[in-house]
Length: 144
Image (cartoon, rainbow, N blue to C red):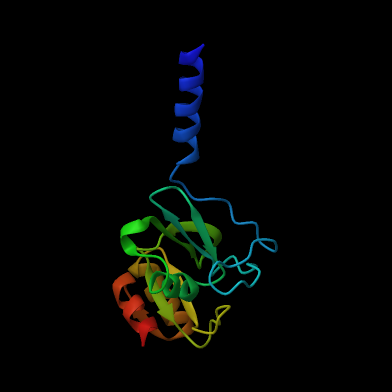
């Protein structure tokens, strides 16, 4: 009997610390940083900690600001952001290329959008104008 209880506890612990993204419930979930309801599928983002806790954001700039405040890089397992060209589909934020363009407003006003790679971002820049940034560069830009 003790073995079954022990096995049940171990199983519960392993499944509760699952490091994976959570589904964003658009129109229902609130941004962890600004508390606005997440509705924009092109600009949503998410952080998942090493312990499996997911933080959802309505804008990339909210996620980056959260990293500069309460959350530390060493606690984060996954950095995710929506692909501007594939709304609602999350991708690795550290591998994305970012476009800041006044022609593409984001929920918190930074006019910041993410593209899956530099080629996609260059096409976005041709279409909307603006400036391109890497993950590291956009974090520094938002700090200003």
